[in-house]
Length: 539
Image (cartoon, rainbow, N blue to C red):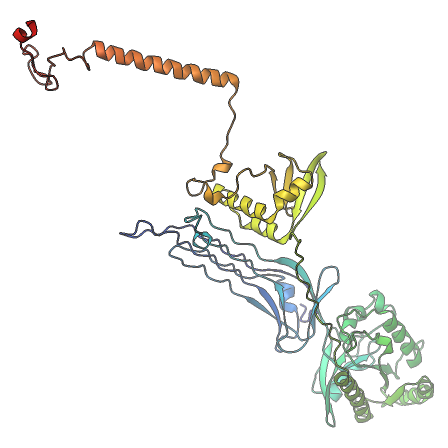
């Protein structure tokens, strides 16, 4: 099982914001409590932070999907939802964050350096936050927005001052073990080193680190062997030390031939912009300071080979050291030479201040709309796509099952100038309009004839502008008129029947009425009409 991983693809996503709450205050003796729905909590973010205790990306190789916690939903009585917890992922020092396309997003160097990989979503507002003088009790709330989600590439580039490069079995790991307290794996077969090894060396007052890179072979820049996978670990080094095997048993190889092959491979390797000098320029690997270490001079053949190739190497301009990892011969001189190069590189870094590009603040233009409308065509029909940060965010916050929330969205878009711009773009009622990219909201556009939903008298959660209204046909109008005419005739017939039956009368000659529960044979005096004597009637 692998114990060292220096490149992984990480899938990160921020937490989703909580939804706002729709609630009305209900308390005894307070009938008009008003809206009291709380806001939703924001989702948590994913942050990559350098941790000195982390040396590999192995954990993210086994678990490449990381998601921050979501925000809580709002509650009544003005109680807001809980905030999502931030997910902090520890990173090794020297981790470079890139996109899938190779764009460098951040270079994490130094303890505590961090990068926000995915931001959490914004929580939705409750109806108490949406209330105003004109809309006193909103019957809707805004939804939470999903957090950012993307794929990033993590590449580990070791933080070392000196890199040891050379063919397999040249003795690089042995030199690291002899010059520092590191104990890398050492064996008598090629490609023993499968992962970069770091060691700390002290030469006088200078303290620096050296890196043992897995062996390079011809074609390493094209992916052969292991060198191509680990050449990124030498990009940050101030100098390179070519470790040449002077006691090789292969007759077709010699130190000069090995040096030429390694130089060609370093020249072919393209250093990216993740490591740049103070002036912002990247120095290719083959142009950095180099030292030559003729290793294994403790072997008789090795001593002879070193004395044979040393004059030619010095003619090329190299500083040559004859060393032996087993007898420690020449290691002190090599250590001080590496310390001089590191000291010079550090002094140059301090002397040359970093090139800082001042930020350019561009205020928003007066006539800036904050959105664009793109004319498209789908199935030979016109389509208008609205793109912008505000419209796309407002759509995500809208609950389309609530008519009042949809009306509120229409008011916001109209206030932003979307409808006016649609008219100018040639849109007609009934045309297809999409807000957002491929996963945007699609609807048939109907211009808003009445603005200001808060001025319309409609129950909470509804919007009369969205009520379906169908214009009746002439036959339907004629049928409705006939139905009403027949209904009035039936009503008059019922009244006439009741009058003839004596159920009700307006005549003053109607003297008596049978009271309920009385003898029908005995006449009852009508209380509403006074009794009239027969003699008086005859007068």
